[in-house]
View 1 (cartoon, rainbow, N blue to C red):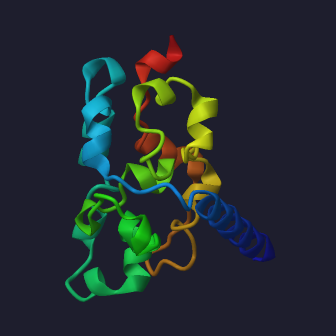
View 2: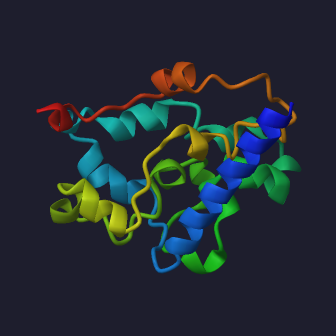
Length: 164
């Protein structure tokens, strides 16, 4: 039990540090990501996200829950960010690209995206287990355990060009 508490605490600390270092970066929404990440040569990543559970996270809430900040913090990217960081993202998007990959305003350009190291300095975060467990944890009333490897495989949306 203590190990789980420590893991959750460390995850939240990492998430908080990520948010603090990304204060100048804005959340632009999945429609901006779609422009490049819905092409066949990129693996149609946007379509994979749109068909998956993260894009539909808001649909799983009833009307009362959809207005509850405790639910929104995990069911919508907008629910866990400061309002001043919202550029064009909407609550209805659910758990958008930027929940897992960081606010995209500064790294969205193709020339930056081609360089992961540069992208990381512009707000990109890597979707590692610590990012996932900020929501997939015992605080959730529906939590039934979380196996990062198993669930990451279910939502995988690799870029085939990255393997080249």
